Image (cartoon, rainbow, N blue to C red; front, side, top):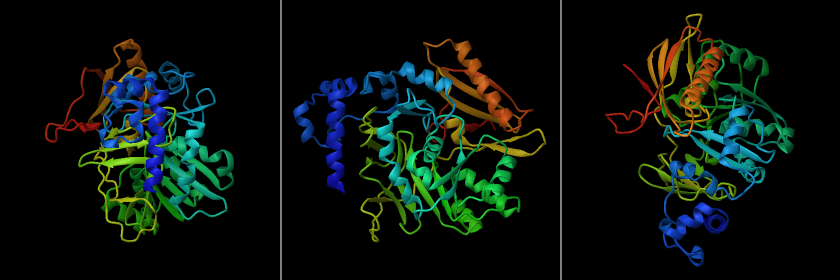
Length: 418
């Protein structure tokens, strides 16, 4: 497997050097020649990050039929995760853990490369399963885009997919779930946790055969509670917008197996470096992500991949607000992490109380500030309306920089004013 990873790494490295203006110039300035690409060690290549890739978006791309302007316009107009840019490209957006908006493009061929790996999340059978994804769904989010695509092509023979938008009232989802009765229940960990509480309280009555976390880190003690309620072990699908599937964790594995033939992951104490081995449209080579992984001794050797400890998610606040009926409902942190508005460069939420919050925005200098603020307000209004938060108020504040946690020195997407 490591030999295969090395072969794929050399292939994507050479492809990027020869087809991406950014990588060609970036490596040339570092004194790296094309001849060295066959032998240079990966650790001798320079590191890139989200800001660098976004600032040189058009130069990074290896195709000349799309540009950042096209992609931004597409995201501004399209809210359906099934839509493709020019019927050729999947587009994913996320701010992740940095608050900086990231946009990632995959050709349909790139995208199809990782689909077979999804079958490792459960015991695949050649029969149709009723499957639910509970997450952000009214745009080009990684989870929704991946899940909705199972309704296309050959995968539609084996999957009857229902996507529940986590932005809508929880009462609506309970009614739909009780009617649908899914075989596979998947989604953000926080959402699964809340559904398990509704099941325990007697409002939800479902008996899934498979339970899958996707798109969010797991809190071990809370995971045990969810598993106890549903009488099922939870699988853990590990992925990010930059590489939609990177690994899979199951109870019998004792951790997460990283798909070394999809992603070359270098593990450091406080971050990882990702090299996406299949995305030729927008190459990401030694791309920094602030995830925390630790290699684990693999005594079972159930899969021929690198085994790591289960991913612990960043400790982001769930936003609990009071709806029109005086009941508490939530806004998931990933909804904020993947909040996209054209011209919005960075964002942060400060929760003041159960009926108010502040939205801090760093706006691209090339955009008209007033227009961007208006679009932010329109999107926030839609978000609040969908949850019936009619009495919740907010303000949008344009700032040059976002607040860093004084205790930890790290950035948090959602903070409390108290």
